[in-house]
Image (cartoon, rainbow, N blue to C red; front, side):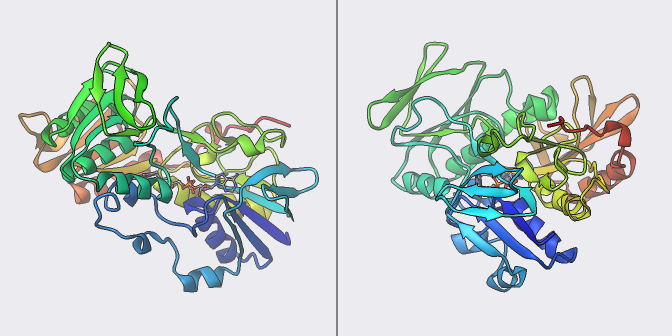
Length: 401
Ligand code: FAD
């Protein structure tokens, strides 16, 4: 393989570049990125960056020495607009083309949009530029902030805005936020965290429309109420960046379909990170984006699926001064036991946090920790031993071309 092109210059793309060099690829390495920035870390955007505790320099994922050592051609600020798999060419938005033998798709996801979200004062939070714009709006004095969506981005931005002294309301369509991720019992703990943080949580109602002419003035709810707002943050999920692959003959369905080894229907094309639907699931977690490139690159260089991985999913979230960590796969019907620490009377975590285990058929399938890093790490390791083995039967073959 003489040339490998990585499309997407962020976390998974950078880790793929590192793996290529670490695994001995010494050919031409091209990295295409739609954003003008070198890879930077997204998790601080909703946390320390918004709070003004981390400046932009601290977000960089690689220092200049490492970037130079990767010996890559960085094509930044340009979007790939197509992949000609027959001609083995990546087509760029500015008309250029890159001939390539192998492709790593690492285009991540974009924030899901709401109709009317182009009004001034309405934000999504996915990129550094989004975070800069939001931070600028939040420094104009006390604001009435409405956060639409009680997922992780919504909860973290609500927490940051409240800490900055703004009046914050979170609107969540479901009766509780984060039920699909944590189940109802732990979702209730997250709801209590909002209340403890001084944030109003409005649940069980959707958003009918954003109000305002040039600038947002409020949010109309489907139950007939209007919440006045100076700043609105739309946190209603992310959509994988796959539109540039339409017509490429790759199978696309809420992500790029690939097997447990991140290999698509074409052995010379692999997908990693938030855009990859690997083995039937698509993760939107930092850790998956850093773990997948190892197997993906091994398989890309081998020209076939040599190795697969099905690690136990892991993610963390920082909200209202608490670190929430979760590992495993929650399924409706799992029973949840708090095995260390406690939940306080207000329904939020007790002063020393807690550890909860999710059980199914007598075995632990997931663990959730709040401010219990050591106990959580032990439980996560145990889970990896029992649940993290590669399971060939679960391999999902990508659709054939
Ligand atoms: P991305 O980081 O989305 O990068 C994809 C890159 O590809 C982008 O730069 C994009 O512009 C580029 N691109 C897209 N289309 C094209 C194209 N056609 N051509 C060229 N380039 C293209 N995870 C956790 O586990 N814990 C957290 O606390 C946490 N906090 C987060 C907070 C925020 C605000 C956000 C946004 C995410 C957070 N995450 C967290 C998720 C984590 O950051 C992502 O899982 C991770 O960034 C995924 O990396 P990626 O490289 O796959 O995709």
